[in-house]
Image 1 (tube, one colour):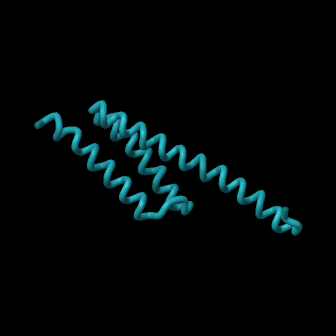
Image 2: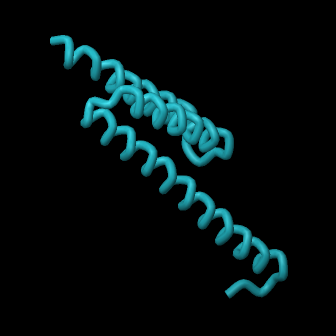
Image 3: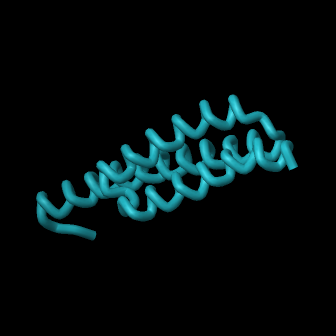
Length: 92
């Protein structure tokens, strides 16, 4: 157990950050899951609306240093490729 007042405060601060980070990660995963469901269903308009929310959430996560910028870029790129493949699969 911490003895210093500042150490105790650090512990409280760390707990708050951990809780907020967990919520943010959960939200990102939820948007990704919803996007994959929309892609699987072949609903391009729904997929695009969820993708914009996911991209926004990923950018915010980068800003708060929850994930690395290149990680977010890679996720957005791969999801965009999947969305673009919806129309191609139906055409073929």
